[in-house]
Image (cartoon, rainbow, N blue to C red; front, side, top):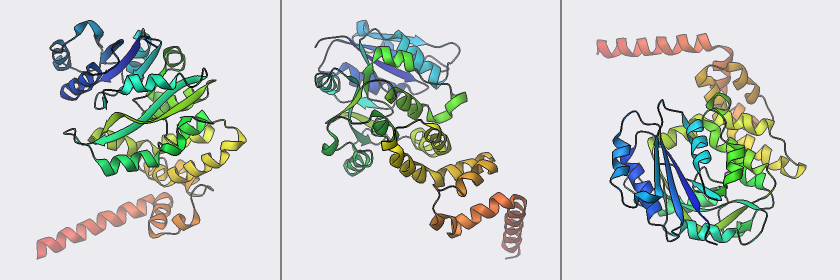
Length: 323
């Protein structure tokens, strides 16, 4: 198999990390690739970085004027891809040198495969690998020897996070048809939403029990994971599933419930927070914990809590001044 593989990189204001991402693509042992970069940055710093890299013949760079936003930027990359298959790579992550070559082997297992992925290393900002965190990440998301090969249910793979938010290889035609949905519909949960809708297509997801990518811990990635629990909760609530996967849905909604309540309280949607608080997915043990009681009080008596906190702060400041 020597077909063209498109590596698609959306980027925004991270020229140095982008350089590392592109260099990881240029280091691939599989050579029949194209690297497509769509840049939403406000300046030309990323463009200058790309211009100074070797092998310009396989790198296609596009600067968006005006910026497109995450979903539209990714969709533009999908449309520009000329390979039969593509890999989506975030600008702060990296591919291992064998990634394309190893992922391509998955397609030889079955004619029904539509997407494949391997394991991820967790790396710090300086690029150093966190071994323990890497093992924990892959175990948490079912990327272990037990799950090698084609998955029985692609929707299960997407629901539990086994299918990653980048570093995967997918049929280009499917990516172009499924597309990312706008943040207006799915907010920061657009990666999960894409995975779920991709998994609903005919075909199989395949897991390769090899490290193929490096996932970098950044402030942006951490904040994003903490801010879209309520959106993920909503997506899983309305998802159409076979009966065999209802247990998994219940399990995931139970896991999301606490963070979803917090997120709704932060944005001021007390009604949505209240509904989840008293749903079957929010256990009684959490409802009647100290934190749970405080949340319920905040939902029912928000003005009372606010006044209490303000008065407490005022008393503390007066005490500080008096001392």
